[in-house]
Length: 480
Image 1 (cartoon, helix red, strand yellow):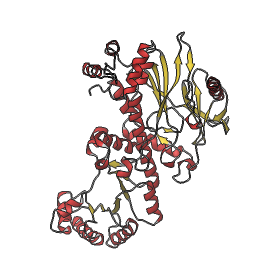
Image 2 (image 1 turned 135 degrees about the vertical axis):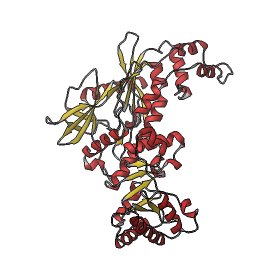
Image 3 (image 1 turned 90 degrees about the vertical axis):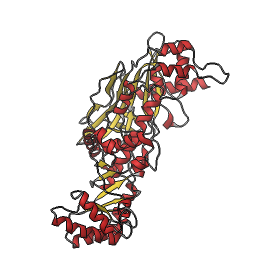
Image 4 (image 1 turned 60 degrees about the vertical axis):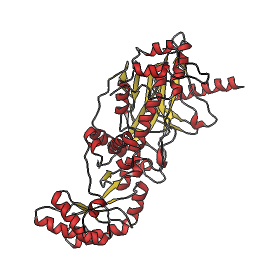
């Protein structure tokens, strides 16, 4: 893979040059990637994209062509935008940051760092855009998949979204994230090969239309794929299509095969699925599955189930891989600590009139508390100050939560990059999928549910809360 160091916003590079000119480029800094609100009206997100991010970081360097391109850029005054000395500074550079992150498949909640970057200020600044791009998107899709699979109540969900995905990379990474989020397989063959995921599929309406009649089309498909027959039955008339599928089912049995399923892709899926189930059962095909597709998501699956649909497998495409009802996670990346010229840490935060937008200072770690086989609450604390008191303070300072003596705590951010080199052992998507399922099973039902979920408590350790209040007071005094 060729270096993609230019996969960044221009202002990251102009700021990097500014740091270089101000003598701050190599000053040690800490940035943290978080999000403020959970997506899709839920109360959790499912981390994803770390492996892709590490791969990008491993290739980070400015090659000769990159520097030549930057050297040709001009500002509004017509002069070169980048100083030759700064480009010479970039030429030998390799990533030297330390990066800690929540493992893929980990549940995350607002204000918690998904990624913590510590290293030279200019490097930590320049890699912001790519980290946000990679992890925002894959976390969004993994979360959407988890919600869809929750609505399906354990029934298989297949990712059918490649043709509607946002470009080739979007299609590949969406399929990976959807699988980690709980999907049972994908129609995306390249993703299946790249990520060792199960691939699934049926046939299109064009197959039926390519032959003189539907029965002939089914018969030809059965001849070609006798052990994998799931017939799409709504090309012309759905009830007639089910009848034709049953006819082929009988012929398949005579040859030692079984009709695996019929797929419904349009119409009143609730009623048609009930009709299909009744017709199949009456004909003796009680194990033949009813597969549904066509603009499905968690809300539509919930509606169909409440309407008494008899659907066994869900093919979900557009609304999954494009995160139809929320196009972005809204992840942010903020400076939280910077060493001064004497080497002492100076903590930083962003002030806002909106409490939700006030960032947290420090070199943060997330501690998660468990008890009774379920998640209880999360705490943010500064690694240098440590975790010293059991009563947590919510971000808006409206609530507190005391850690029970019986609770077990574990820190979540783990080392993934040290001095620019990966120290992360990558897990297979299948292992990550299993880990994510375990995480979701431990999440309290009232937080996991799709409708009217209750927030999960995330609070600041008291020393960190006091530090934040102190820094806010300093900023307010400066503004007076």
